[in-house]
Length: 111
Ligand code: FES
Image (cartoon, rainbow, N blue to C red; front, side):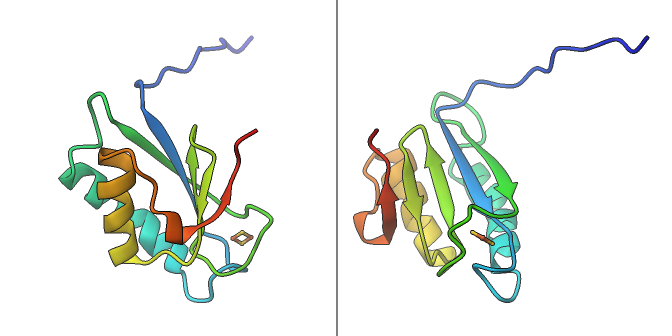
C-alpha cells in the first residue's frame, strides 16, 4: 500500500498564475514571462517573507485573447497583454505598494 504524504508549502501573501498556452500568445511569451517572474520576484525580495508571491503556470484560462495573461489571487485581478516592463510595474505597484495597475486589468472579480 502506498503511503499518502500530506504536501507542505510556505505561506504566501499573493498567488500569481501565468498562462503559458499558445492560444493567447503566439511565440512563447507567456513562458518567457513566467521565467522572468522568478528572477524579478527574487530581486524584489518577494520570493520570501511577509509579502511573498507564489507563482505558478497554467496552460489555459479559457479567455485566450491578448496574452500574456496573469491572474493574481486572492485579489481576483486579471491582467492582459503583459510584457517585461509592465510586469515590473505590477511587481512594484501591486505586489509591494498594494495598488493594482488599473490600466492593465481586463477583469476584477469582486464576488
Ligand atoms: S491559451 Fe492562454 S488563456 Fe487560453
